[in-house]
Image (cartoon, rainbow, N blue to C red):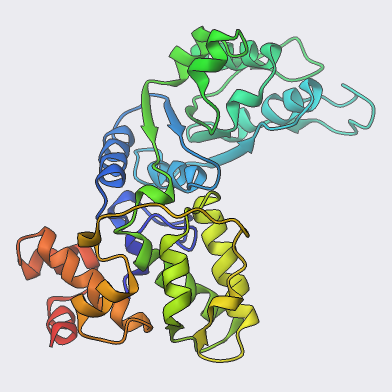
Length: 333
């Protein structure tokens, strides 16, 4: 199964590039198209999206697809840090700069020299921290905590937040000059509920990943479990999907995951999707002619959908699915 063909937490971010990711949903297709453009530039990138939507993964694969791919990718989460700790983490500190500073330490900017620095939850920074980031991004200059010496680093910045930056700027909580500096290109990741075509394969990929990790031979979901997963609104996005599936696999003693093993939020909301998207258990069966409870049925549905996208061109479909033409023919047979 081509589990690498979706933007999902089960993908290996250390080596994956944007060529490994595809989608059947228009919002995600647009996201990936813009990400590919961004990867070919040196512009700073701002990634927007709900919590758990895959912002860190997208930042990593953009780096892996860029001219800086052989240089470091340094990730940093700015949420809930004091200014002193944030300064130390981002710009480093000299020995004795504060109590407990026993040695000189390089910061994230310095470690990311010639590579990419990813700052997650950048909107959580204080005004003071924002001004220091602005100078570092604008001039490539910074000072270690406890030092007056200017240091330089050649860093490509990717930032991310789940917060509404325009509202924060209007309230004076986020600097407009910093926003314009970090948003050379803005890429928005759609929430999982806006990706109904991708959801079946994402579920199958997570089941496969959890099965490998827990050394279980899971075949899929029962009909009620499938219906609940498809109709659930996924407020926690990919992170929640991964947690729900891995927990369900751990709780299930048989090869088929039952609905009661799905630890979803009690009051889950249902979103409406076009029946033509083949996202209900009944439409899975109708489209594939197979038992909708198996991973094989979901895989076949995905292959047929990709073939439809490329107008029946098997060579293109095989390339998108990252399998050989002969393998595709065998699966179709």
